[in-house]
Amino acid sequence: MAQVAAVHWLGESIVQLLRTRRDLGAAAGTLGPVPSNLDITQHTIAKLSTAAIPTTGLGLVCYNMTFSDHRAGASRTPAAPPRAEIALELMYMLVSWSAKSEEEQANLVWAMLELSSLSVLDASTLKGGTVWENGEKVQIAPEPQPPEEQFKLWDALGQKYRMSTAFRARVLRIRGPREPDHPSVVASRFNLADEAAVLAGEPV
Image 1 (spheres, rainbow, N blue to C red):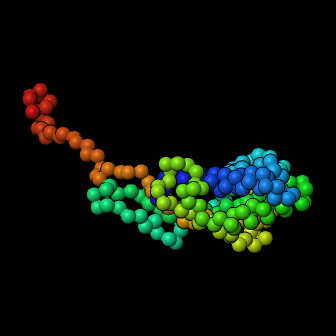
Image 2: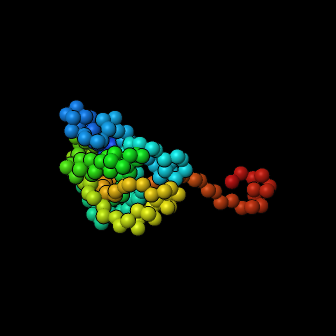
Image 3: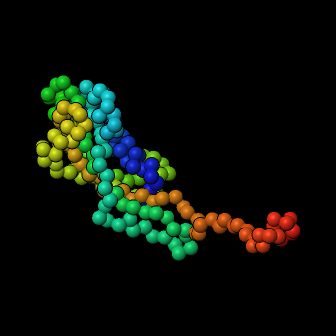
C-alpha cells in the first residue's frame, strides 16, 4: 500500500529510471543517435494544454487514471482503525520532442526498449521514500492505442500531433490516512423548563 503522493512519485520514478539508463548508455557509448544530455521530464496535462510545448527531449504525461479490476486487498489487523483503500491503473503517454526525424524516432524507440527491459518497479526503483510501504511493486506494460485515439488526445490538448506511445502502470494500491475507531463525540446539554417560570425569572 502507498500514500496518495505515490501517484506523483510513480511518474518521477519512471523518469529517473530513464535518466539513469541514459547516463549508463552515454558512459558506455551505446546511445547512438540519442543525445547524451537528453532531457527527460514529467509534464502535467495542464502544462501541455496551456503552455508552449518543448522542442527537445522526452516528456512523460499521466493522461488518465482508473480503478483497477484488482482489489486493494491489503491485510489489516482486527484492532486497527479502518482505512480507505483503492487500487488504480495509470495511463501514461511518452512523447518525443525534436526537429530532427532521426532523433525524434530514436529517442522514443530507446525509451520503449528501456521500459520493456524492466517491466516492474520495486523498492530499488520507486522514488518517494516513505510514501511507499515495504514490498510495494508496480507493473508497467505497453498500452495499445490506435492512431485515432492518439489524434483525439492531442486534439483535446489543443496541440498538433507529436510522436508518442502509451503504456499502463498497474496496480497502484493507495491507502488513506488512519481514522479514529469512532466519530468524535460532541456533547450538548439541554434543559426543559416552564416558559412562564423562565419569563418570571424563577430558577430552573
